[in-house]
Length: 206
Image (cartoon, rainbow, N blue to C red; front, side):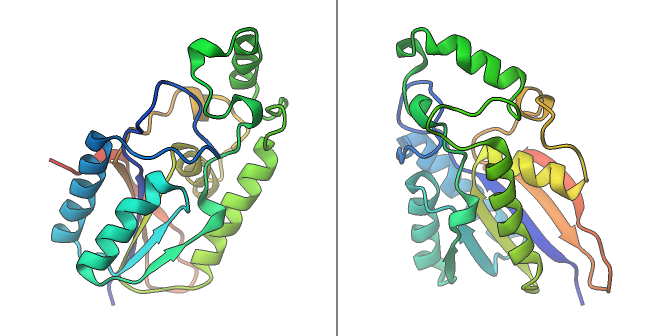
């Protein structure tokens, strides 16, 4: 029996100015919508997608729903795979943050020790993302599962799978996960098989 394949797909470019978009339910731009659609179509044509999972945020869910209907693939929405909630910073254009910009810089230097005001701690964020992943692993399905989610979610999952410290700020500052890019994970079909990361952040929409 073939290995289980899981592809983590970041959503496309959003329709808004540069900002921290976590809990803010911002839609995709036209370009972002097209890029994410092409990514899914390309993946499906090369390795048929059997299971589709999405964050509930519209920047992931809209294209997931369209793809699910088009290809008659059951869609599961997982609340645990939402992006981190950045509290009072969330969705505010960077050029409108004023004095809060200094606090955001401090957050990026040490995200584990500084919680966004009225937002989610990195500890809580990582815990729920890992809960979502473990639920997926405990409910094994053969074939190819495509998960449409967010950059922060993908970074946490990479760290978790590789048993790295997800509190390390380099994970968020130095690991680039582009819009509509894919991170491929395979799990062998034998007892005790560990997830194997085949590639990170690859563009599959050409």
